[in-house]
Amino acid sequence: MTDPLPPAADAIAANLARIKARIAEACARAGRDPAGVTLVAVSKTHPAEAVRAALAAGQAVFGENRVQEAAGKFPALRPDHPGLRLHIIGGLQTNKARDAVRVADVIESLDRPKLAAAIAEAIRREGRSPELLVQVNTGAEPQKSGIARDEARDFLRACREEHGLAVSGLMCIPPEGEDPVPHFRWLAEFAAKEGLGTLSMGMSGDFESAIACGTTQVRVGSAIFGARPYPAQAAGLASGQALGQG
Image 1: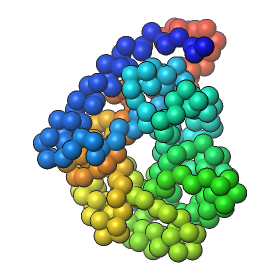
Image 2: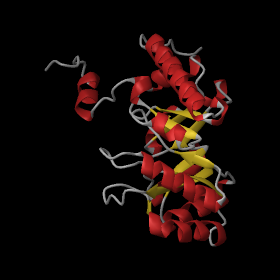
Image 3: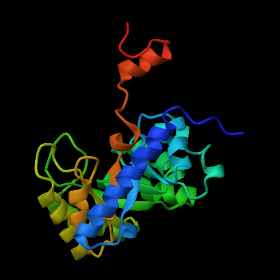
């Protein structure tokens, strides 16, 4: 018997419907088929009950930043939801590569040679091959994960030829406060040159622009699940304190 859905289930379902409508409208403006854009519902920091609510509303594709958090939520959900797909979208440590290969259907944050080697070894050991996307740091931001633009072509070649990895696409997170469109256009053009068909671009605030630039996946979290709890808030909830008190 599954757990009851949380009180916010109706709100999550309504949010999903709104986002899907906006995706369809953006596709219409761009002359694209909405079926060509996958919505990745980013459930990081939100509880399994929120994921269940989204599943009940028809959402099947989810994104998580941390492998440990993903492993705590999703294996128990898979038996009842065989169509569920999990994307790891956060920066990935090499010592978590095997865990990521075990739990994820897609790893979007392949971004350096040591990680490529670790994923290749994990695939060999686990006998399981998630879809792989290379994350490009299009804004050259030192605090962000991602391979540099001018290193991306050689890195892709190394992933394929040295490590035997079947990279299928690219991901980026444009700098906050900048126009994301030049970043989206660059990534789309680079993907086309490299023969890559999957593009993961666009989040809650800019996914319509990403659709206009040709993305095949958009990653939307807060617009579906609401604001993410901060650690202090989570600690307050765990100790029985209501938010806004104490």
